[in-house]
Length: 290
Image (cartoon, rainbow, N blue to C red; front, side, top):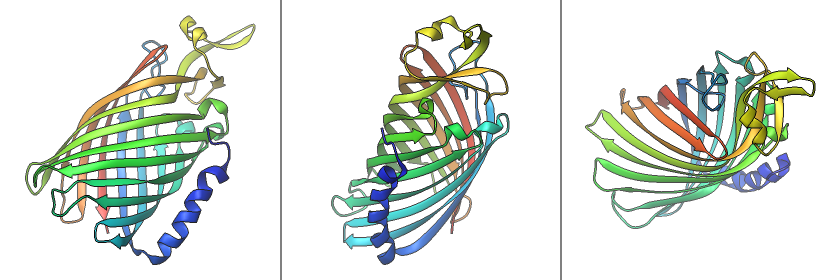
C-alpha cells in the first residue's frame, strides 16, 4: 500500500517533465455525464442498499511525442468534478497525470498495439476522511480484426492511500471489450471485467452499549478495518473488505459531427468474498474533442 504523496507522484513528475517539454499538443477533450446506480453503498441485500444519481464534468489535455515510426510517448493531465445529488459527502474533485508508452507491432491498420504506463490521481471528497492519493501501473492490448471490429484488453495494478485506513487499499483489474462499428455514426461496445482487491461495503448501523454496530449480525464476522459514517444521511458502518468482482455490460455510442459523441452504457457488478454485493450502473455521457 502506498503511504505518502511522494511515493505515488514523485516517479510521475520525473518522467512527465521531459516528455511534456518535447511533445506535440496539447490535444483537449471534455466529458460530461449523468450516472445512476442502484447500490452506491455496496451493501448486501437488505435495508442497507441505497441508490444514487451523480453528475460529472471533466477534461483532459494530452501531449504526444513520436519516439520512432511505431512508438508513441503519450502524457496527459486530467481533472474531474462529481456531484452526488443524494449524498453530498460523496461530492468530489480529482486531478492526476498519466504517462503511457504505446507501441505498434507491425504495419497497417490491423497490426496489434501494446501500451504500458503510470498514472497518479488525487481525489478530494466532501467527506474528508475519504480523500485519497492513488498510484497505478496501467497496461493493455488492442487490435482490429477488420475495419469495423476492434478488440481491447485494459489492465491496472493500483494502490490508494486515504486519510482513513478503511478507505485505503490495493487492487488488480482487467477489462476486455469489443467495439463494433455498425456504420459511420453508430458504435456498439460489449464489456466484461474482473477485479480483485479491497473495496468499501456499508451496513446500516444501530447504537449499542458498546457504540455503533451493524444491524446485520453477519457483518460482525467480516475481518478488516471498519468505521462509523454519516455519509448516507443516517447511521452506517463502513467496512473495508477484500472481494473478487465480475462485471459485464454494453454501450451504444452515436457520433455527433466530427468531434463529438454520446454514449449510453449499462454495467452490472457482482462482488463475492465473505459477503456478496451487486450493483447496476447506467450512464449517459457526452464527449467533445477540441
